[in-house]
Image (cartoon, rainbow, N blue to C red; front, side, top):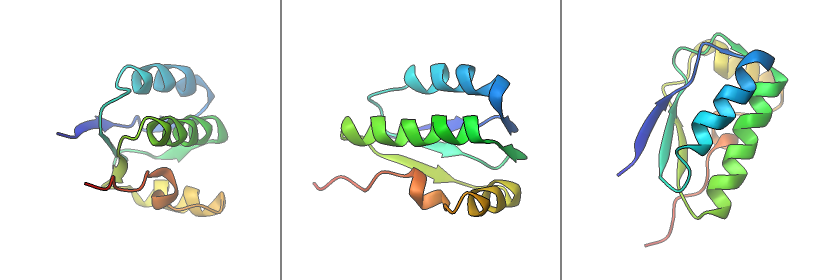
Length: 93
């Protein structure tokens, strides 16, 4: 079963440490990040999300992004990324 985690509206420096802690508390579980409320994606927030991707991938777990807000998608493009760059590949059965 995949857990769902709603990302905060602002993924900036003040949000980075709490976000990292919240995500690490869900480590070792398949996780879907709901990005529909995100209005600001800063570099610190992006770093946390990329680190989460590496961690979930190393653990062999699925990390996905769903329901991205237009602001989230646009700001990922500014960084040269897309939501799929934050996801791990599906595990082989």
